Length: 113
Length: 264
Image 1 (tube, each protein chain N blue to C red):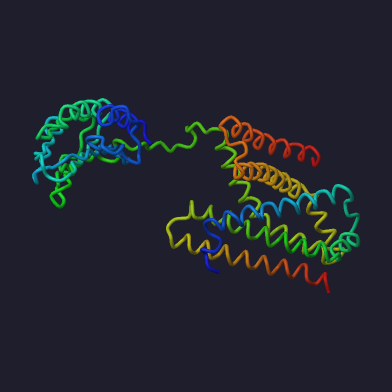
Image 2 (image 1 turned 90 degrees about the vertical axis):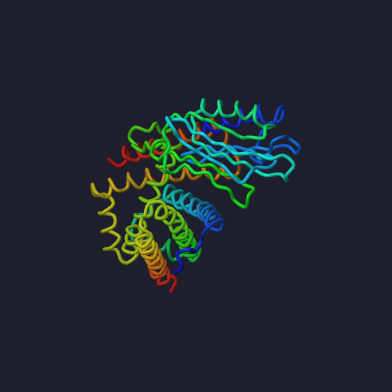
């Protein structure tokens, strides 16, 4: 993954749009927990068998990972020296985030089957 | 703009641009001589554009006084004398007073007492293309540059706490993503996994982690909403920005304390 992905004005926009998406999902998730906490495994699992929640979960994780990328990239650019270490850490971060995206798919997609 | 630069610009305004405010964009057309002020971390630069200089300039530093002399000829096309001296406020005021008397004389001489000794070996007068005279007097970086980075003793304004809190909470939340993914995976796998997740979350460690994550989330969301409002130019005045910073700081802490009370 190119470590200059989502930079400049695009990073700014990605950060804002993803922030709103994340917040919307969190408000929805907290509200649904508040209204009715899942009593057990069966109920918890049946919730996630709803395609709408699967799509929402995938969208949430995409927004979250993009948000994490922009945020942690800013942090690494500020503190990680020298440049070689910074490049390594940015590459490692990108690899972890791609791995997390694949993991999320591996969690959600079997539920849809 | 440094305070020194501000002072310099104010005095230059009196000398160079009577009745006209000096600005970074340069003086008004027709003002004589045109001038500007710039600064670097270790010097203040006064630029005066004057009609014609001889290709000979001298700069000496002796007994704490910087001497600069440039011969000037009338009748030649517009040329520039660029002086660059490092000076305290009073030094600068004196030198600009001198400039007042010199702008129409054939010789440009300056003797300037410096409050800090420049590096004598680094004073130089140079001419470029017989038009620009530049005199540099460098003061060693360490004597002018503000170096005070003890974060424990710097008085942080409330917005700075919100900002560093936003960053710390963001890192905490990012670090909690993989464990959260693992918990979600485990809880959806089978009833045993669900039970294990439940047991983990109600364990003392799980509760402590939950409180940290809840504080991070609350602070990050409140400070983030503050950012979004700021992007829309809402609450950008100093008073409003301080109020919203307090709301974010205190709000995050209150949510964390309430959560702790509910869990423990």
